[in-house]
Length: 305
Image 1 (cartoon, one colour):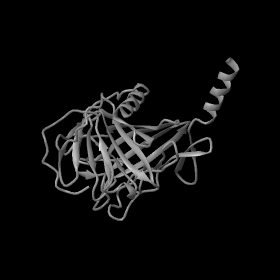
Image 2 (cartoon, rainbow, N blue to C red):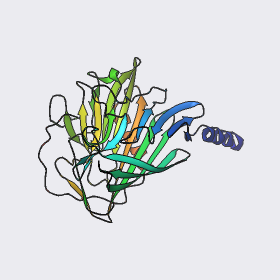
Image 3 (tube, rainbow, N blue to C red):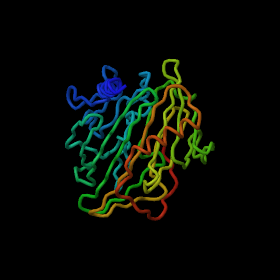
Image 4 (spheres, rainbow, N blue to C red):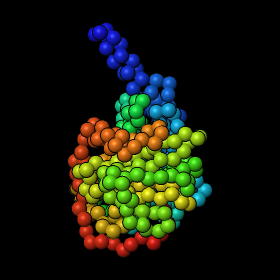
């Protein structure tokens, strides 16, 4: 029995996901010979992002830079900081510049400078992307810690800014969303909704196979997440800090840390299984160490995502 257990543990370790640096600043996460995820550290001049993320069966769910919104980069993080837009890439956008990155098994650790269009540094970021994978789910933890460099920074943005995920075209118009309490939040425009809760799940189709994606927020995140969801004209899911309504200040010398999860399941798990997946992610995830503070509410959003 003991020898069998040792063999099982060794086999599991051999197939544990590990990031590998490829050409340029591309990092591929593989488990044995199975691709799991791809992260691009410097391919885009405005921001690094996760290019691919796969279900246990190998179904890739993310779409990068579609013609309708070229600034939608698969799984990305962006907000507005002191009036500089780090989400859209139109007139004088901000740049999230990777200054250092290293792979440590299933964990990517990077440092970034957030600079305005003139090159002035607004924020320093410490980012980690940790991915595990088994037959139940692919589980990603995205941890970002933002520190004001020299002067106070206020985070705002549209109602969809934050950690955003653009799905494959096969999700568009047919994706369905599930929330912990079963109810979607208030409508904003068209199919857009903003919902509170510990997590939000989206089910869509990839090559004829159903895949369900859960985006989760650590309960100690401050500000807490508000989920942006939409199905038409395309499917999208964001964990937002609700900065369009309640700006988040970061004082000099202070840090705001936010911790989010993404879980990818094959099929259409019921709400109980999704909740169990969230609980498993939460048990394995350290809380944020630093929180933000609220200021006065900002006007309602008017621009499209």
